[in-house]
Amino acid sequence: MAFKKDFRWGVATASYQIEGAAYEADKGLNGWDVGSATPGRIFEGHSGDVGCDHYHKFREDVALMQKLGIKAYRFSINWARLIPAGTGKVSEDGKRFYLALLEELKAAGIEPWITLFHWDYPYALYQRGGWLNPESPKWFEDYAKVCAELFAPYCDHFILINEPQCFVGIGHQTGEHAPFLKLCTRDVMTVAHNVLLACGRAEKVLRKTCPHPVKIGTAQAYWPALPFRKEDYRLAEKETFTARAFGSVSYFTDPLIFGNYPQDALAWQKENGFTFPESDLSIIKSQVDFYGFNTYSGDYVTEKNGEVTRLTPPMSTPKTDMRWNVHPDSLYYGPKFLWDRYRIPVVCTENGVALSEWKDLNGEIKDFSRIDFMKRYLRALSKAADEGVEIEGYFHWSFIDNFEWAEGVSKKFGLVHVDYNTLERTPKSSAYYYQTVIETNGAVIEE
Ligand code: NOJ
Image (cartoon, rainbow, N blue to C red; front, side, top):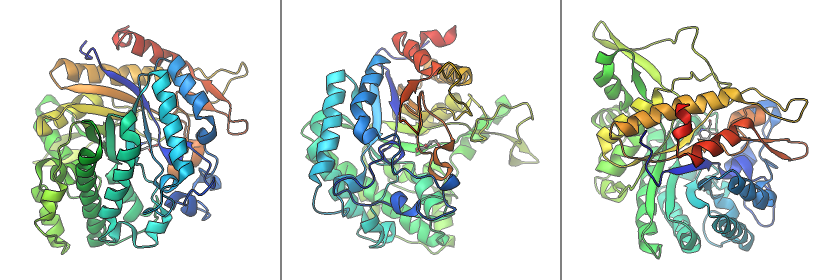
């Protein structure tokens, strides 16, 4: 059992999903504040307007994390709360909120991992063309600089942009997430490229501005291909890194780490008439200290008639409430493939499960399936660690039930239950189980 001694056992959340206080003080609007008001977009008209009201209840939440023995907390900054217009003036209220949260974490001995951007894009910038605007990487750089100045005194770990695969692909191509656009492929390529330029600029400005050396990494949406048979290993690895789709990890991390798009991405760009100046690649190329990945499942693949085939899972395969297959192998093969390709320490920046569950008549949430899920996935992760993959941490998604984007609050990912009428927090059985995982540095998962 090979979790390192200083393994980061954490939990993760994101600003729009938990903060609420959407209209507090001088906070600017973001794409989700505005977009969720349009009927039909979000399940049963839900929104994150109130969320878990973490904005007002963060002290209670940090106290609960401390009680559960959580070592690290990954959360994101709501860009328009900090800088209402996206650029320019910093909000005193936004600043006060995040500094108070960081103070609270410090007092509780919990290490903050800050995600700069987790999908709540300032609406004022969207009105100026959003990620299609050639100025957009610079806007992000300026925002990152403000974050570095304010928060680096408290924080050693920064994640640049959460899951570009989703807000680029699902936000700009299929239109199910903010900004709810259905652009042509070439324009989505422009968006993706500006996002990469933004990452590159932010990495550089963080290193320049932070008063001490910080660790900078990613949080990629990573759904690896898994070998169905032993001999499918290389095929699965290759399939995992194909880059002819915006859901690809190599499309977004090869440029960042190697300074170039993968060959198949370049060919795809050519077919769509997308070009960029060669000099952009040196802006994008960054020193990535940890490769953060968010993994929930993966697809088994095999070879049929010389072609790679994604297999339909057997009817017996357990499904989560998101209808995602329970495939613990994704936390074994996934990190192995990443480590072999990039040779950068990996961090599981998200993993968890949505279950259909509710408080029972005794006021408890006995989510034994979540405990089983965690055991199975963590066993897989520890096997990868045993085989030499450098794994620095695991962040369970999520600390608390929250707003699951287009699904509203109908999907429950939390270790802690929220009553959306009273906003009362109740740790589920899995929260106490995770506490024992942390206490034993993972040993308990073998029992
Ligand atoms: C990925 C996203 O980063 C997070 O916002 C989302 O809630 C979870 N996965 C679950 O879908």
